[in-house]
Length: 145
Image (cartoon, rainbow, N blue to C red):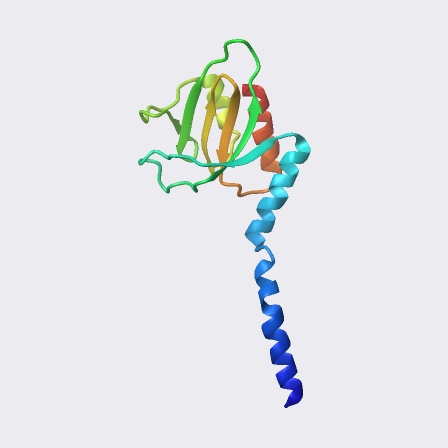
């Protein structure tokens, strides 16, 4: 009886330590973020106001992978992936720029948004997939920067 009492007390004392251990999903995301850092991609969690027509609604905050832009007057644009492979602007007009679409086709289906402003190009991603997806994301951001 004493043994069971001691074991029960130990379990009660040590059980909160199990809560501190990251889940498989969290471990996978941490591994992707470390790999992104290793290949030179900058990443941050950025709050977003998603359009009401983007379903299912992406997470908020969302993982933003970005690179600085080059050039003196780079073009500014924003596209959302409404369904896998269908990229639309803020008025839900389908992207018809063949140059951009060639790069967008290489991106995974869980990329929610890609935007380019004067300072940086940013991609908002659901962080699901293998580390090889990071190579496609990196190549796309480098090419469009």
